[in-house]
Length: 114
Length: 109
Image (cartoon, rainbow over all chains, first blue to last red; front, side, top):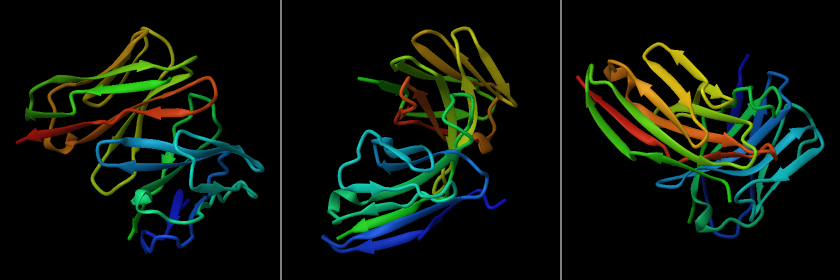
């Protein structure tokens, strides 16, 4: 199993550009989520999904869109990048949303918006 | 508002010097309290889930405990390889997971 994979590892954007961060898992997990991690702020939940076709907003959803058309993939779209979106982005998955299931995290995407 | 607060922000210990990390939480309908370890440049790695007050779990030199308001991560006789950031998180009744800001632990040889 590859686990949770994220692409790209690094990305530089200009203000106003759009892009999609990719996340995939091969563990047949139902629950997937996106976080951003900023210095001094910890991990903050952006969006999450409890299964294909179902998504919901987390703590900081503004400026981001998600969709979940398959169990395996959960892409995160930046509609119009802003410098405030400079961060490290982590995707995570677990078997389901129940509390006893550990989340597996991807290696992260480091995004810089100029 | 759901909140998870970790203390201290940073902790330096000598090898073999035991200590505890604190996680205070106010999470609506807590469904689980998680501990993760994160090494620089990597994603968090799962350590424990605790469900109810009084529960304890152990893994090597780490032991996690839970009360109705706090969780503690006890580190016994730590080694330099235990150096990392330790993250605490709570899952609320709506399946949302709220993370604390972490404690950076540095074990000196």
